[in-house]
Image (cartoon, rainbow, N blue to C red):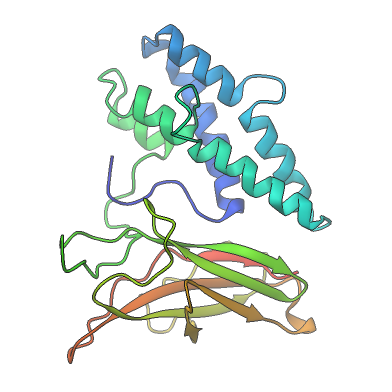
Length: 251
């Protein structure tokens, strides 16, 4: 699989992604020669009843309505974790990521065209990670922003480093800078942070992996777009590639 993460971090984008993924798999699976384990795992993920997709969609329907309690947010987070990533410590567990790894990624019957239709590849030229490397390995550091907590007119975002729960800045990084752009919620185009005229402004640096943005009454109902860009240590202060933009509606 590619170094870049093909599953969107924002819940709204993930909601659209997972529906497309499931629909495409259902359209292609007849030609993939699944064994009984694959059939059973797919039923656990997407079958009828209180399975993983159903749990996620029910939780998202409540939270996306903007009329929800903290307990609904907690359930949404748990539902997404179970559906998207699962628990690798449970040998019988499954999830979207586990399923792709076990039955799709290395299945010779799955074509590149099908993978593209399922959106499990990153389009050529698209970058979703920072390019500042570790001193030890020199490899890219995949990372993304997500929402840790949201209350009225306040959004706390956090950085996620796949493969670890640590929020600490990586080696070689001096600053984890957050930039923000506020726009009408009905706009679907995400301005490119790499374009100087895109309108993003510096918001602040992550502290212990999080940052809280506060908004005014006039900004309620608008969309806040965030991205992080790392600044390296040293005299040249190399800037990393911006992370994928994280979008959330202010409520």
